[in-house]
Length: 164
Image (cartoon, rainbow, N blue to C red; front, side, top):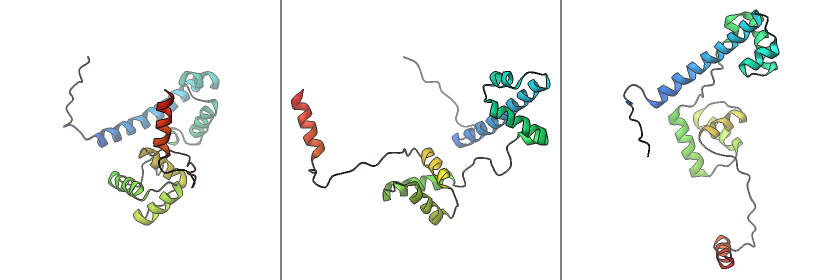
């Protein structure tokens, strides 16, 4: 049996650790773009450069276009597109609680709730990302027939046991 390692958690919170990881991931993306540009400087073909970095040719062409338009600075993410949610973690927790208590099932209803409750503007796609982050999954609604007995599940279990 493997032992669980001990780790000192006094250095930082989990949230701060995750934020630092995100910052460094952004730096790695810029570094990969610079590697790509370096390959092109050294007359490596776009196809081969893309294969070395595991990116698509479309991405490679986009990176060349960014480079040609503005050099180093154009390869970094633009300000305002940092991917951070406008909702704090406390607001997300509150949102999750409200969704569960009120049995809200649609992204559009959550969009309206966020706008009314937190006064934040989002697209439906952004709301879907927030819901995914909150561990809500997509489930297709199923029909419950009005003539179906209330104890249908119990009856089904009994018939399955009797067949075994």
